[in-house]
Length: 277
Image 1: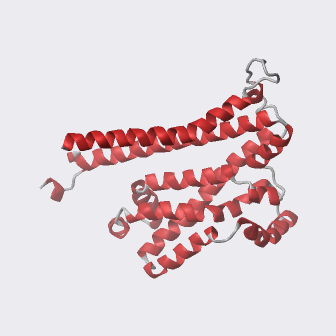
Image 2: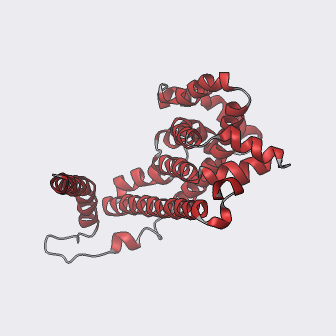
Image 3: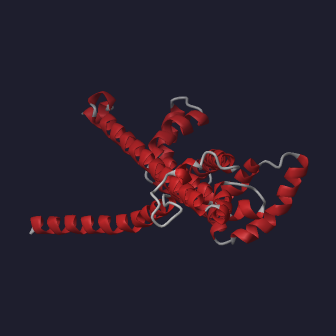
């Protein structure tokens, strides 16, 4: 009976994997097929649309700007959210619900409402500091707060933050050392997931950049769709493949980190005297 149940479970997993794989891969393959079509009905396939990605006006700049925004947003999110959540858990546990409410609030506010509220701030920034597209990182940090909070909260809930921090403090470690060398290595997977969600949201964001008259990747793709549909679809497929590769890299890095922690926890040279006994 156990073998039968195990076989049924394996079959169910294979069916689910195939169905969801087809659900994601079929549209991507159709987009790739469209981007490689020739001009005529019987014309041979060509990669001219893909080759035009790096030569199309303003497209390379939009891609670089989106990547820079993704990096700045992920770093800003971690610098803002991680110390706040750790400090709240250690010193102010009563504020946990308030912090959670504030972080989840952007989910309930439409993007157009946020833009209306932030538009005067961007006008002031453009007149007094800079009108660079990188200023969108302020808004993107707000947008990624709900998703990053859930990921970091799951990681912090899986470890005993108070015990680890008290043990490190008793050995003379300062708070930067506690956060960077004690807590962060134990929630590395949660950090990677939060960064992945931030990068994915920034690379796919369109409303803020379009209404604030900035040119990011999605705005460039939308403009290309009016002029050259093949190049537009090629850029969309390339962005999806980039997100997929990034997901695989983060997944592999998280597994290796988890495996190294498991080996370190079972190796006798890492065990304390009480654990050896």
